[in-house]
Length: 271
DNA sequence: CCATATACCTGGCAGC
DNA sequence: TGCTGCCAGGTATATG
Image 1 (cartoon, rainbow, N blue to C red):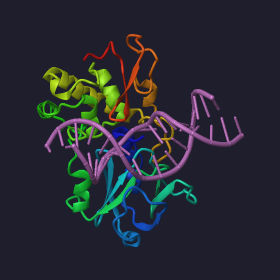
Image 2: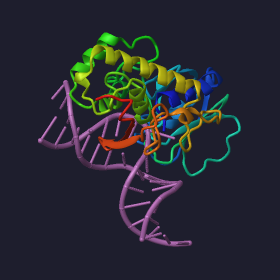
Image 3: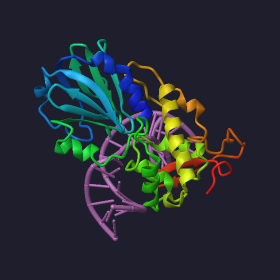
Image 4: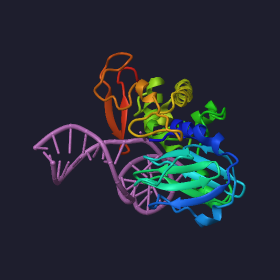
């Protein structure tokens, strides 16, 4: 579920409400992808300074240390004073003086990891290799194009890899490639500078637009205040196999790349 | 260094 | 109904 827009929408939906809170308790459910990395009780008494995002990770800054949250494929957060007893897929509760932050994650590919600082070994292992943020002005064409020139893999796979630019997952990779008129199978190093610029702009546009629309709710995503997303209603290609292209009417195709589905329009997107 | 496959886990759905 | 197989928003890790 959660790509950059869903993670950012989640952040925006509770960051201001949890800032300043004091942690009063922690509850662990079934194991997540990684262990927490500290004694749960040791978090009690610490204060939440704020919530940032790096790629698809949420960083909850504490007065001592950081909590890294990842939503995996099926995770979502809820923040409220009203949350009752945990249900089957509620696997982490952070209780604070301003409400309870709860991770619901049926597939448990998500995680909550404590790191002493952003420079700590645990944090660097998860964040250290990530590419640039697409939405904060750091996404430079020259650097992007140079990076593309060094990869012979299909452009779709390069985008998913996150080493050049973060936050683009399976939905938005297909959408950005549609918007820039690039076939997902084109090998990255063959993209001209003008095409790289079209792609860069499409990534920025599609991710920004998706944040505005509250993300994509394909099955169960909602932000921390329970709001659903609506971007999926304006998707041009994702999950639209055999349906007509919204621009030219050609039947949208689906193919497999690296064990993931890709969708594209063979007429609008050039090799 | 790059490229590809694998693993993790649960639930929904189509087809029989 | 109930079973089976396939599919699903991610990414660290192992292997070539």
